[in-house]
Image 1 (cartoon, rainbow, N blue to C red):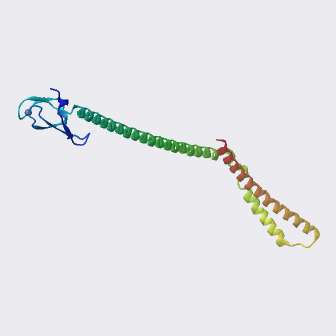
Image 2 (image 1 turned 180 degrees about the vertical axis):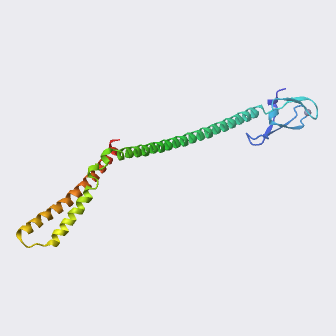
Amino acid sequence: MNGDQIMYTVTGKPGSAKRIIQFPCPACRTAIKSPLHEAGQKFPCPACSVPFVTPGKPELEQQKLAEDAEKERQRRSQREEEEKAMLDYERKATVQSLRSQAESQQDAESVRLASVLSAAKNNPLMRTPSFLHGTPELLILVGILIIIGTLFAGPHEVPELLVCLMLQVAGWFMLVIALLIKIGFGLRRIAIILLATAKN
Ligand SMILES: [Zn+2]
């Protein structure tokens, strides 16, 4: 007996798990209810015991297709989630590695600069030559004493006045020389540091 020839109805939303086929027994017309997953299977009628084939095979096929499609959709969305998580992770890892790379470059840069500066400080040219140690201070002291001394001496006769004037000039000359020594070595130190940092 062919189940498809029995008049039947299927209740429940297509795709839902609980779908019921309702049909009359082909032999005794007793109303029978079967779950959709039994469609196509052979059973004896509970009333007259005549076997029948449960109808609803097309609906069962559609149900299976819908379930497969749903499973596929879930698989795809799960895969998309996983890919998204992977991309997120990779992006974070890239940012992290770029950041630590930049940090280590910065560290290397400051270590290098420190070594350049310490090398520059150890440069013998940074030191004032020993024969000039104390010379600017001595020149300043003597120069100031001469200038003050000649100012207070205050002679009025021409020869003494000329000597005073010359001593004044010599005093100022000593101050200028002392300043030039100080400024000159200071500028040389600055130039050495600037050259060392610019060169490397
Ligand atoms: Zn029956």
